Length: 315
Image (tube, rainbow, N blue to C red; front, side):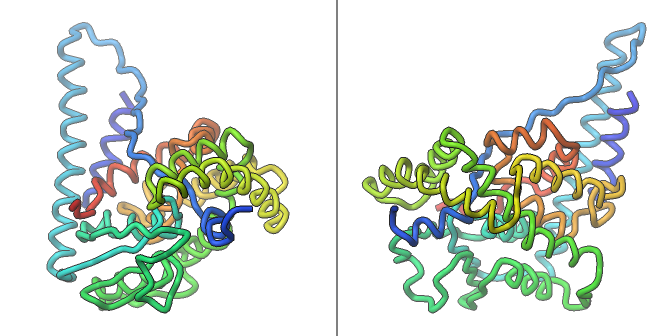
């Protein structure tokens, strides 16, 4: 019963060569999935009355879920009072880890946003902008670029009273995400031909490709990125890509110091950055291996519940 009670307590506390442009794009992409995470709990202690045990368990789980839902609702109302833009538009590649960082922030803060999926070859959707990378975020017509800068700008609009330090724990781990964790993704998702094809199967299904581009990208792209991933391993001194990914996951869990989140009782910007970067690979082979072979699964599940449903406006 300790495992069940512990989970409820933590949940309650959280509530208070192909086209070179295409090659460049795919080198920084990962794959996302909306498949729900399985929950695995320890068995309840034996009680003489089975219905009583079931009733207690039901109350615990119902209370935890209700507390989490209430916490998200209160958080969303607080944010709406401080920051309530009329239109937020994210120009993105669905599989880009930097774009997913921004989406994690928007989803957690319940900021409604529209998505414009950018064609990674023509980039016609962002021809209006002098900046030719993604993510690009427009807030009531104001353009913001670079994922970390976007998040900092939004956070400042929402919390003008808070001054961020460059030396604090949160900033340190956000830099770790951008300078280390994100570089482990491509070598892992393109580790071999089968994983490369698995990755491009998602990219070509969810990305903004024409029929011809989809065919070329899936097979020629997977082959090209397999070789690109080998170059990335050398560039970032990665000997064993899976071991490096596992080590990063364990390093992050150690940084939590048994707290529910790095931010304590609720996620901070570092929690959202790690979650956003890892969310696209969670159900690929690399992501499944990471959860099966490290301690990060419990934190990830907690983050998934806390971030909640996407705030994206579906047209």
